[in-house]
Length: 301
Image (cartoon, rainbow, N blue to C red; front, side, top):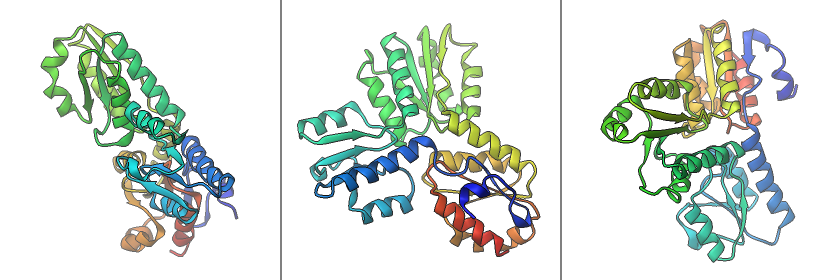
């Protein structure tokens, strides 16, 4: 039985797989296009600046095809064709690659591009920009860098929680205009709490909900399955923002474990054996073959 067939039915032993588990369209586009680049250019070196997606299995597969993943600051290692990963990159990165006469293939997710455009729009209009997300995440770094190019005062803040927001309240109150965008894979709760906090203290508040539709659908479906499950299993990289957020959300609903591969299931064998109804979902950067292996291993219990 194919994985897509499993997404339509309930599996034996009360195991239910979410329809939205696995690659989103942005990730699928990036991976397939990068592989196609190499197959169409076998005599040229193809590299990706930073991890194309947050999944080591995919990175290793690309390496086996001859597609190198290089550090996003190692421009000396850039080859003939350079792929910009799905998280995006700063204008400075593009400038350096152009100066080196490299062929650039921009695989920035279209939804991430939208956030960049909204952030630029806000700073151009004089808004103090707040980016909701993790400051170290490549998507957020790229959003901030793109906005800074057009910012007159360079006052752009990255906020990952309410405590960080409260720390800059005085600076927020000094500005009449505050603009907000959010990392595409963040939780809606952070956006809602931020807006509720800002409304009483900001005169002109402009908010863009830039969480991607795929993230919203994935989270909503997983929550519905979790309400009917004794155990939820979230499959995907611990480095993946959307996957870790998925696990965090589900832990408030039912027993939840986050694994990267089927090998980790043995660590939770007692919980699995004692669970009658098990739900399975996966992050946007988790390949179908990894999900399939998890399902097959679960069936052994």
